[in-house]
Image 1 (cartoon, helix red, strand yellow):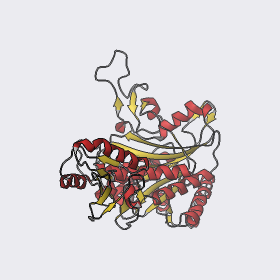
Image 2 (cartoon, one colour):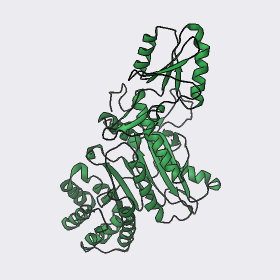
Image 3 (cartoon, rainbow, N blue to C red):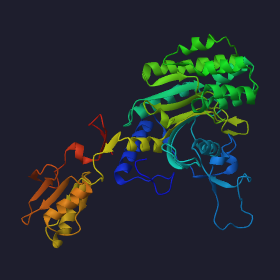
Amino acid sequence: MARTASLSGFPEWLPEERLVELHVLDTLRRVFELHGFSSIETRAVETVGQLLRKGDIDKEVYGLSRLQEDEGEAKGKGDAHALALHFDLTVPFARYVVENAGYLAFPFRRYQIQKVWRGERPQEGRAREFTQADIDVVGDGELPFRYDVEIALVIAEALSALPIPDFRLRINNRKLAEGFYRGLGLDDTAGVLRSIDKLEKIGPAKVAQLLKSELGATEDQAQKALQLAGIRTEDTSFVAQVRALGVTNDLLEDGLTELEQVIDAAVQRAPGKVVADLSIARGLDYYTGTVVETVLVGHEQLGSICSGGRYDALASKGNRKFPGVGLSIGVTRLVSRILSQDLAKASRSVPTAVLVALTHDDSWDAAQDVAAQLRSRGISTEVAAKAEKFGKQIKFADRRGIPFVWFTDDDGTHQVKDIRTGEQVVAAPETWTPPAEDLAVQVSTAAEPAAAAV
């Protein structure tokens, strides 16, 4: 983060930093809505049983309890009815779909931007309280594979609109990986995936040792699994490379076909943004097909800034299943890197564009009338609190980062001063408008002076 937080893992932003975060959030919201995704919000609290039913990450879950509990209240993780803060937005969303299925139109397209909590060791890019921005499409009974392709393209568009370095969506398919392992004779495919998921952290030699010691793999099986994980292409040539390894399996063929469709579409519609990377596994057990992790080019050590994939069995109600596909952007992780590396900055530290100065204390009501006229036309305006010397009022505006100061003479003439350049002109509150770049706070990258407004 740009500053050291007083409570490690729980970031807080200064006003100008928050403006950058708001720009990121508003940009994501705009892109998601352009693609027809509806916004929802789920509760922050779920039962422990709900949170842990698909993947064991109980060490990272924050339990929720009152300091003084009533007798009989659920006490801890051993009780499935105990309460805990959600660690992601996918599991709560699955519960939301099941409970509201009668009110939703399927396929249901949702985006969700909320805080989540995870008990990780704090470091840059890993906080204990952070904001995620998710998009998902969920079907009733079935969900065409084409949505896997669409989700990847929407995320590529959304990330391209942010003030961040170049990025790559690294995409694999769990069917491809699991089918390959079964074709090798390794039946504990979940165990192999968990081992492969550690590849970047511990290296191929240690992963091979894990496969042999914990899963009973032979040297040849371990090396073939590592060869698969080493395949990475920017086009569909990965298909031939996988087949050259000589492993056959029906599930493997399904996965190859699905991944080929995603990569083929991305090459056409998001060139240079997507790669087939067969080392991507995703640790959570609920993924069943497409899996995605995203890195910033030149900032790979930050880890994945966007991840997710296909889940066919996470949400169900009796015999009724709700397959889905979705991706989650780590907003706090992105913002912390933007700020710490000065990748983008807000053009000023406050939304205010104009400070209406006071000629004398009795002019406060008239100044409020001027401010109201400016605000009615979308110009963020403050009124000075005291009728100090104009020099002091100008210094106040400068300290706050307000670019314009408004003056009203005793004869009713209005003037506005750009305190950055010193230029002062006659103006009328019902018609004057600042230059477009000053009307709202702008967020720009170091390389690009032009930017979007917050």
